[in-house]
Amino acid sequence: MAGVRGVALPRVEQPAAMGLMSVGDEVAARWRTDPHQAVAVVRELVAGGELAVDEVLDAAADSLVLAGLLALQEARTASDPSTAAEFCLGAVSHVTLAVTLASAGLD
Image 1 (cartoon, one colour):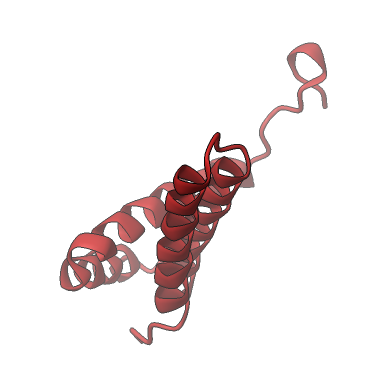
Image 2 (cartoon, rainbow, N blue to C red; image 1 turned 180 degrees about the vertical axis):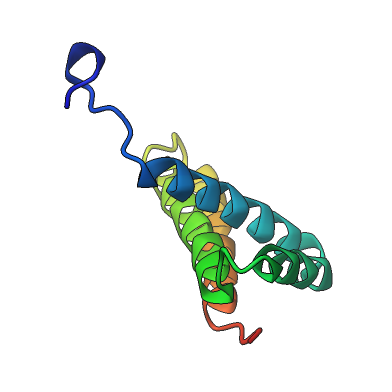
C-alpha cells in the first residue's frame, strides 16, 4: 500500500520499532553520564514485560553505532584535517560505548 507520492505508509510494527529506538537513545545518553541511572532505566523499562533487557541494550548500541557512523561521515567531508580528526575521535567514543552496552550483562 503506497502513501503520498509513492512513500510507503508505516506498518503496524514500525511505531513499536521507533519507540524502541527512542528508548535506545535515552538509555545511551544516560549511560554516558550516569551508568547506574541508565541501568535503573533499563530495569524499569523491562519490568512491564513488554521489552527484554537485550532489546533495550541493543537499541542503545544501535543508536550509538549510528551516531559513530554519522561522525565518520562528517569527518569525510571536513574542510581540514584537525576537524576531521575531532569527528573521528567522536566516532570512537560512540562505538566504544556501543560495545560496552552490547556486552553489558544486566540479566
